[in-house]
Length: 126
Picture 1 (tube, rainbow, N blue to C red):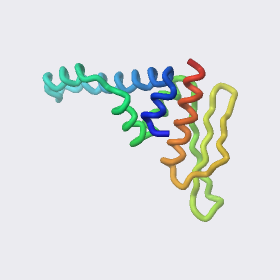
Picture 2: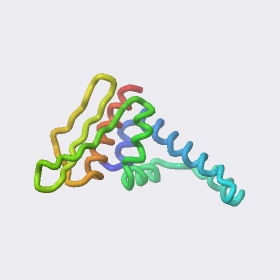
Picture 3: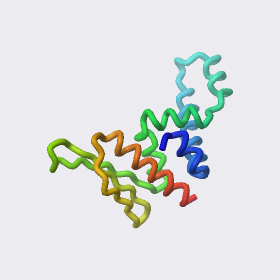
C-alpha cells in the first residue's frame, strides 16, 4: 500500500500520524533563522493526506517514533545466512509479536511492509 492508501484505510491511525507531522512542522518553525513571513505562511498551510502520504512513501522509518510513542514497536533484522543480506521484520504490540515470514531485498522494502502492519495495529488500538 502507498502512504496515501494507508492514511485512507486506517482513519484512526491517520489522525495520530497527521498530528505527528503537524507537530514536527510547528517545532521546526521555532528556528530564529527563518523569516517571520515564511513561518506565518507555514502555519496557515494545511497538510493534506496526499502530502503526508508522499512523506511516508519516501521515508517510512520517519514513523517509527510515532509507533514507539503508541507502544507499537517495529524491529527490522538483517539475515546474513543467505548469499546477500535480506531483511525480515517484526511488529510488537504489548505481548503480541507479528512476525512476517517474508524476507525483503533491502531495508526500505521491509520498513514499508512493517509500517503497513503497524498502521493496522495502531488503528485497532485506538
